[in-house]
Amino acid sequence: MKQNWFVILCNIILFFSPCATIAQTQAPQKDIPDSIRISLLTCAPGGEIYYLFGHTAIRYENFTHGIDAVFNYGIFDFNAPYFIFRFALGSTDYQLGATNYKHFASEYYALGRDVWQQTLNLTQDEKERLISQLEDNYQPENRVYRYNFFYDNCATRPRDQIERAIDGTLQYADNMTDSSTGITYRDLLHKYSEGHLWSRLGMDLCMGSKADRPISRREMMFVPFNVQEYFNAAHIIDKEGKARPLVTSEEKIVVTGKTAADFQTGGITPVQSALLLLLLVIIATYYGISRGKTLWGIDAILFATAGAAGCILAFLTFFSEHPAVSPNYLLFVFHPLHIFCLPCMLNRVRKRKLSRYMLGNLVTLTLFISFWAIIPQKFPIAVLPLALCLLIRSTSNLVLTYKQKE
Image (cartoon, rainbow, N blue to C red; front, side):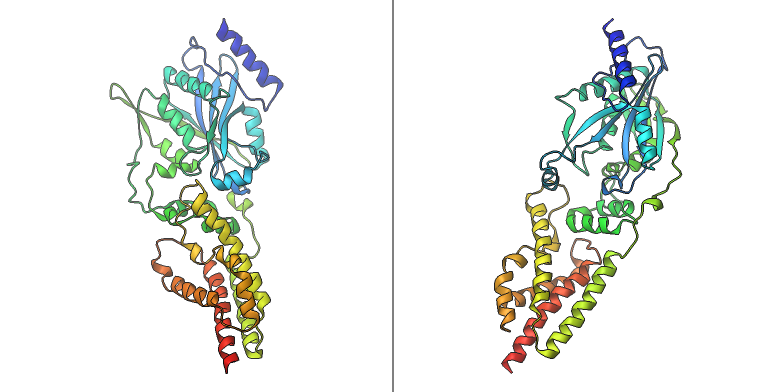
């Protein structure tokens, strides 16, 4: 009786509110076989930076009671207090949400993002166990979790819940702990940020050397499409040792006609912008040296900007809980000292006196550029022209100081 009351209530909620969440979704124990279908949904990337890697959800259909719900571990409140600060600190909380399928599909169609459905080959007990897990996870005291982009996100959580529900073991086609492929976190970030070069630059600047270590196939499953791929080739090994495919069928259930190219951004690229800035700095520095002018305003802008970027990198490196942001060797180029030492440095530059800070910066940047190829971190190419800009301006101070003595 209690279960029947729950089913009626669940349908009322779904009927009156297309975006309502489901507080209770326990599958009745007396459902006939095949009346429940569990599917993994994989959503195509979109145009916003938080859509670039796609999305994963679990679909629960109960044909006996007319339930069609989607469980989604990617819910966050962008308007929550201090969201940006907490996100940078790596202490962002996401939560499990639930909605009816029609609303879910309509939303993704409106966003121009296709959705694929993989029907899972689970037994009745496994289906009911998975729904019970999701129901428990959806309780107010359990639904919030500490989000981690690489290790605990909207793709890894559904995978873990499905693996827990299986009465046996889930065997993937490949060795999931093998990292011999040589693929890194940064490689995957680049793959899914193709056509979004400014977003890629931002991610590259923030990611440290740990993003360049080879990762295992299981670690690659932070990307929804990798979960989809590995699920297709996986088998369930039951307690009797019998194997059956995890996925019985796959189909595209939301078709928008859009591709990743439709979301790509155009315009001037980071490398082009950096090269243009380098050209302007070279021209201005040549003019300043030939005329005996310090052009200290250029130094103020360049070093203040580099210092501001350095403050962000230093914060991420030393205080953030985000994985793979530390150590970051870009701190040799962009660091807070550019701001802290700026007044004293500009005072020396304006008087055409030797700035020890400029001399130290010249040595540091020369070493950084010289050892670029062997530093255990991949740097975006746009960093090289930017480093050269700072190097050239540091050299300008030494040249003008020498000419002053003459």
